[in-house]
Amino acid sequence: MDPKAQPRFDHERLQVYDLSLDFVAWLTDLLTDVSESNRPNLRETINQIDRASTSIVLNIAEGNGRRATKQRAKFFDDARGSATEAAACLDVLVAKRATRRQRVDEGKHLLLRIVSMLSKVIERFDR
Image (cartoon, helix red, strand yellow):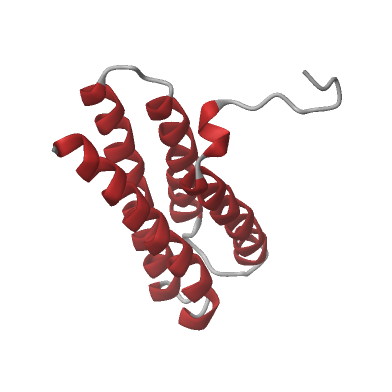
């Protein structure tokens, strides 16, 4: 083993895992901007989307670490649910006028790809 090589877990080899981390990074920038706005009543939505985005990443990792097929499918399904929840939170931020629809488009595209990829993974378990 190359002493300079970084150790990698199995979940770190998944494209959907990398994409979910890309969403967290994108979201961090958005939440910094939104938090600096003077809009009232955003704390709950900001906390909710932060938890949902973290849940996507954690459920993908935990699901990929499970051996039992049903358990794996459940964690991937939970990750998919968190991704759709995060998309709804972006809509709420727009509805509360904390940001504009155009500002959240990139994040929603990332989430749509994540949901699509997770749906395909889950389908394999349903066969």
